[in-house]
Image (cartoon, rainbow, N blue to C red; front, side):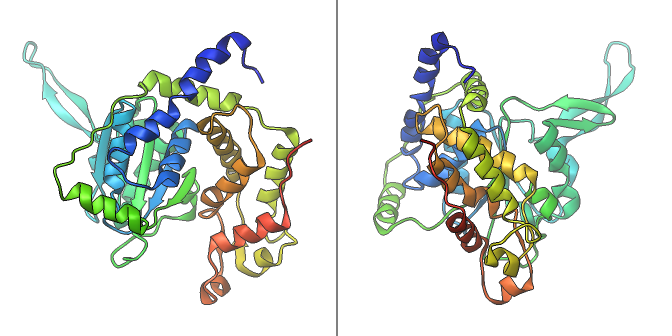
Length: 334
């Protein structure tokens, strides 16, 4: 590791605050611990995530609560069929200098200029508007009229989509799906959790997260994430896992039978970075096999392109990922 011993105490103090952030979010959000953890992992790894869940599971409230706990500027964009790129990025308007009378164009920043952006129901807008996010997600700048406008740092896009209603939607193309670090699935709460939600939301209880991290703290944690140690054998194993998703290189029957295109190199980068971020979330400075196995699902499920046989037999990406992990078990180094 590159970390200096003199820095470890300060870093450890910062890492120890991560459970406090989860505790603050729990004032508002009941359950969904794994989803919240994966969103935090996405932020620490410096990427973006796609959150899939049926309506009414408090996706917007969850993201808003997370931004409050980290003292970050939050904006929500409702994606609709008539939404235009300028509605997201911003637009130029003609202004006049009241002193000289000279006219000039002024760029008015759109809602994407926030630390945390919720792209709600991203698949409800046409590809032209979806594509407007690509440069922002990858380069973290907005280019308008030949001028580059840097986005805030840190910067996180959380896009949501509804898995059950596909009428009038525009599915994200594979190239754009690959830009999302994690594809997180949000399920229904347990019976106990749902009862607690009903009790809290229909009474007088009003929870509000307290600030745990500043934007500077988040940037420090993002830098620290890249310093987390990963053993060479785990690094090599990630490479094997990614290559095993490709039918032309795989010996795993489920991959050969159902996968048309496997994951690219970006998937390996995502899995390593997210495993490092998960190690930090768990209070460790080294990656374990469990980090890789846990995050293989949200990293890979949107990067496997399945052909018609998988759809006909109702084979889902998670089932194929399970087969890959079973065929290539990860062992800790001795």
